[in-house]
Image 1 (tube, rainbow over the protein chains, first blue to last red):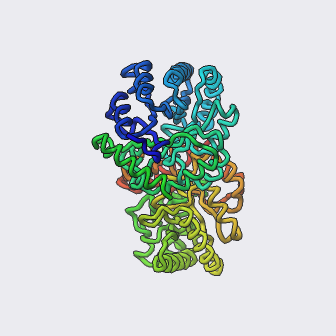
Image 2 (spheres, rainbow over the protein chains, first blue to last red; image 1 turned 120 degrees about the vertical axis):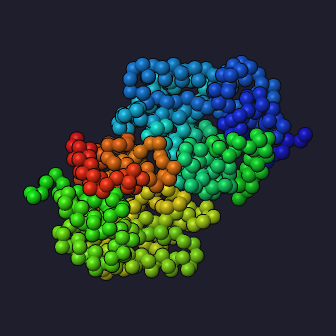
Image 3 (cartoon, rainbow over the protein chains, first blue to last red; image 1 turned 180 degrees about the horizontal axis):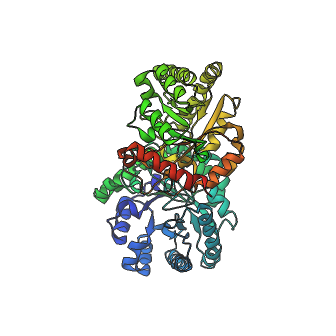
Length: 279
Length: 279
């Protein structure tokens, strides 16, 4: 089959088809003509990192990202030590999988804490410990600012500007940022921050923002075209900033997860072409 | 009863006790020693503006705000004309009630639209039409940036910085901003923007940010102390910026609404003293 040139930069984030194992997702990408995959650590662990690395290499897929490290806001020593150890393991896995980056979701406020400034400082401190470890292994860390509605419980990193303030204390090839349309589309400052990000952009993820948000707001990520986001201007901005990497589709959505994954891929490809690539 | 000096700046936003009529809320404030009230147009309309104005004046209460005008993003002429007319009525009501400001929730994307920049421009255009009308009637408009999770469906104004960019095109006494802890607490830039706001701060509203967010995310506003927000630093920042006005408690929460309103007021007073006033 001649590869479809329009899909040359498309990547399936594995959570979009979360009932698929790594092997199934790799096969699904090959069947659908998708040249890259964003892996998650949990399904990778089910078969082991070496087996997962062989599967993607044999299929000729790029690994656009490994999701994820992070959760670096623990205020107690034991929690902090465990988080650093787990992130070092994640870095090793990203190296073994030859992933373009390791996505970091930095973590929210510890239970009962209201010290947002302290949590943010602990993220910076932990990153300073992890960045050299990642550099030695050739792994690029990618800080992901999450939508502000997750500030309390998932990520105290809430805007692209804030992520860049943190990333810029390290070399660009060592610490980059994720631009995820769901998380940044509302930000009046996003255009300026994407331009500022430039070579810091380590990952570009797309999915739509749905309303009303579902009861579990983590699952408000929709198929492109089903929500409120105008994708082409964001894609253009990311490209104008110099990003030429993969465009990863990452959807957490109960309805998508209930659908046959091959059909999800077919819809995803159609929507990617219509809604992301076409102005 | 000697008034409690600690409550000198406390205001009950009427939605916190939404089952109460204006008369009941006014009586409740008097019983509880709360010197100010934030009114909503719908309950005011039930008895008429002159009657509501008499009730609050006779009780000796200040009207810290009238909620609300706005919803200025309609893309069609008819919708635009109707919104402007409704906002002029709201301005007239705020003048008759001697409200310290008219809160504007600017509106989300029109149904099916993904043109966020266009919606934001229409807000600016509408404000240019309304500001002179408000000035003539001695009413101060207060732009309320809403949490980014409401960008699509309620307010394309998502940060204090963005609200100030818009407000600053008008004199400060004519167009101010609302600082609502629920909407801004996550913002890494909030300290700089509160300082920048200075005399633009027309209203300071407090309530907590709860997780998990309820199925209707509009109702994720909690009693101070029940969520993730550290209030004193925000109060200090607002005061350092020069704000000496009322501190309004505005809670949308199914559980609070199901509770006897006099008990809600007692809890609100205790939490205000413990969580907002006490460092």
